[in-house]
Amino acid sequence: MSSRRDGPLMRNTAQSLNKSRVAITAAIGVGVLLGCVFAILFPHGLFSPARVYTSRVSNSNNAQVGSAPCESSERMNMLKSEFVAASEKNAELKKTVRELTEKLRLAEQREDQAQKQFLVLGKQKKAGPFGTVKGLRTTSTIVADKSVNPRLGKILEKVAVQRELIVALANSNVKDMLEVWFTNIQRVGITNYLVVALDEEIARFCKSKDVPVYKRDPDEGIDSVARNGGNHAVSGLKFRILREFLQLGYSVLLSDVDIVYLQNPFHYLYRDSDVESMTDGHDNMTAYGYNDVFEEPAMGWARFAHTMRIWVYNSGFFYIRPTIPSIELLDRVAGRLSREPRSWDQAVFNEELFYPSHPGYDGLHAARRTMDFYLFMNSKVLFKSVRKDDNLSKFKPVIVHVNYHPDKLPRMKAVVEFYVNGKEDALKPFPDGSDW
Ligand SMILES: *[C@@H]1O[C@H](CO)[C@@H](O)[C@H](O)[C@H]1NC(C)=O
Ligand SMILES: *[C@@H]1O[C@H](CO)[C@@H](O)[C@H](O)[C@H]1NC(C)=O
Image (cartoon, rainbow, N blue to C red; front, side, top):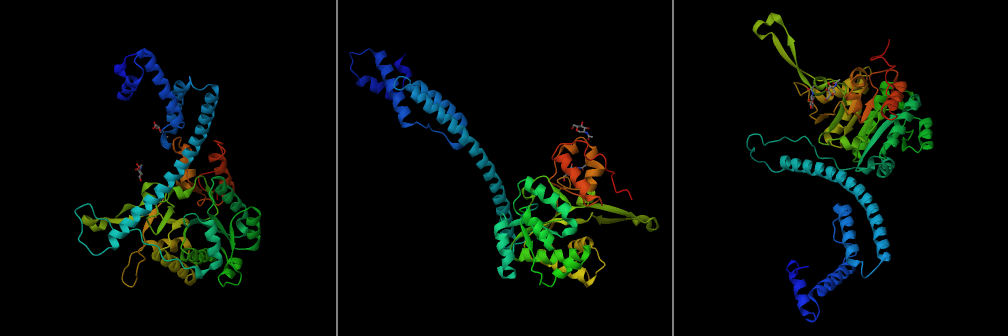
């Protein structure tokens, strides 16, 4: 053992010892002493939480070597239990890190949107250089108005997470589907969801199953629609009820009940638009828009006319932020549905969202985003293509909406069998489209 390998401290300490001692003995003594001092001063070692596992292991090894002469198996046992505790702590930390990552992602999303809003709403300024300018698509949210519906406000305070929740309207006609709906929502661990019960039976059913439920006051005028009205009348009601949620300051993921939840949709939203909706489209073109060329040979040189096309947004599954354009949309749709009783709510919803201003008409000008059609999957995509494709069928969507098929309940159950219970041929018995 050469003194040249030791540090300055070691050399100084050695020099201060009685010179009659053999240098080697001194070096060993000091080594042991330092080992003990180290073990006492740093029983937990020096490590950062992120690297707790590896640090802990190497530290306990060092400490064992250093402390062997001054302590014995007692120290060993202590270290062992410390190691076990550290492993448990490590698992906890991993969970915390996951949660923090999700929070960070949300915070970044919001900061990014706030920055963009500031950039656009701030004082007038010159345009930046080529390729650096960006318009506003994230409208600021309204000031919440609790007086609109204090009872609903209290429910939402309890149910919503980050001022967001899933909302579905249901009456007893859809009881069986509703059960599949909330069972899967509960299974994936979503807590921020609410059923708006349109009759007493559904309210009771939800309460018996621990499902958050809101039953409207029967005296409220629009609710007579709920009891007596057909499907389309209920659709109009949906837009009026939704308005109150937005006025109370909440973002709503409006959901039909013929939907199977396979993951938490709140992890997959962009939140940058007034309306973020699933599509009835089935591929990139139909879902996201394309240039459809219309040919008119009589026009000769100008025989090709270009048209813009997009498959409609599905008014049975969309995320809507509490903004003025969003509320204007709801009002416009509800207004038209009451004035034009034969109209279809989904067609009206899309016309209001997409038609531009023109002579005699002011368009809505709401910001829109189409959801990924493989993540937020309609039943045409599933039954016509995904189930037949070995690659695509291995990939788990966030939701499946059985909107394209009338035999909703059996197809919903088959979707659960396929994606949740891994039954590979669960989807096979069904035809691509309906049989009629
Ligand atoms: C469809 O669009 C996505 C991005 O939106 C892209 O990654 C993918 O390659 C496109 N698929 C086809 C077949 O064009
Ligand atoms: C699935 O993916 C593999 C590998 O990327 C590819 O070779 C194969 O053609 C794909 N199959 C289908 C049906 O698209």
